[in-house]
Length: 216
Image 1 (cartoon, rainbow, N blue to C red):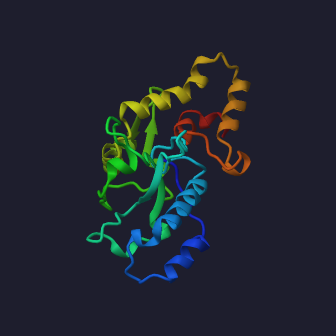
Image 2: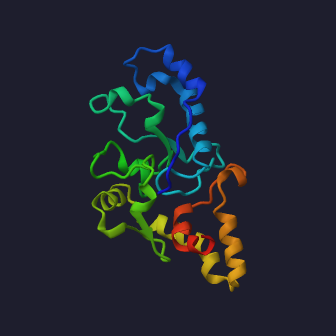
């Protein structure tokens, strides 16, 4: 899980909210604003999922595989005052979940939230709560209960995500790279998004955890 540093609330959202009642629901924002917000959040995150860090894509049929995700649920009975709060909304993958597809990230989390047992990507220390192995799995550091629960609730070790992480790691393990080549590769994939066309490398923190030591 990569730390997400939220920027300033976009004007289109701020202006829309000023026209709404203070108790407005998320749906009151309307389709256009929600779509603009989704694309804004995608860019803010360097085009990777707020939870698993897979790439956020637009599909061939122009549908999106990502959606606006509320850290604290938008349910009126839970956190109604945060339903339109920019600083409570991020972008998660699995925008259009097929029936046969295993849910993970925001879709698996659904309306679950426990302040003591959830590691938020908006927390500056979130990256330090997880560790990774070369088999594509993610674990809680030192058995951290919140990290362990977050992994389980978001289904971050489902077969699909494990295989995707393994595929990204292949180039580091299967190529006969010299130390110099490995260092150059790691530096390249761990570029900040400002130097990488606005994008972060898919599964950024997995690579950083396993290979970041080579560029420290």
